Amino acid sequence: MALLLALGAMGTAYGAWVDDIYVTGSLSTGDISAGLTCGTCWEEPDTPDTDIDCAGGSMTLTIDVTSALEDVDYYCNFIVSNAAGSLPIKIQSVTLTPLGTYTGVSAVLTDDLEVGDVIDPGISATGKVHISLTSGEQVDNNLAFTLSVSVERWNE
Image (cartoon, rainbow, N blue to C red; front, top):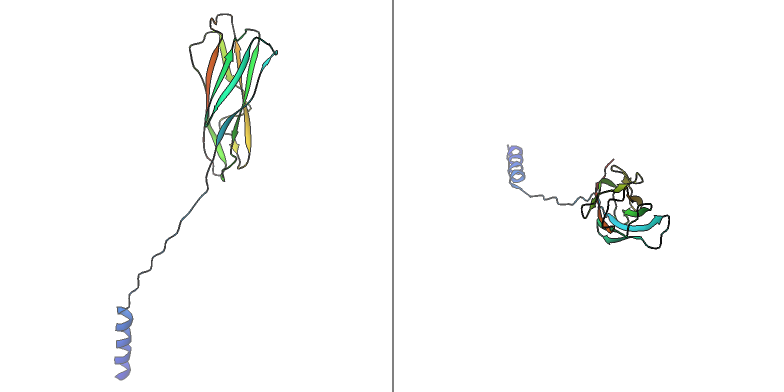
């Protein structure tokens, strides 16, 4: 009987003992740090009376062609970098938008950098814009375009 009372008292004491346990923590999957910068711009053939320039930062650039000529091709490289990120990035979109209504102008992105391309951490990728006059219709031969790039985190 004493044993039964002792076990009962021990069970009651054990049942009355309550302790709250809290578990906290954090989870980090990494970060992306994409950047867009101007690369080299040039015209072919090299012509002294005309020029192509690139300026800007963040994820939007402005490309200006001054005194565009019909028989000249204008090129401008742009660089998408993932220098400070710890995760790969995937190109979601690359958009070239004219800042005016131009007739007889061709402005295209070459296939050097395409939607869906993946850029690993610490790596950069280069794309290229090609601008040309397709006919002599363009009255104002000063042309301007914005180039914007959108990226997303990429998981295998």
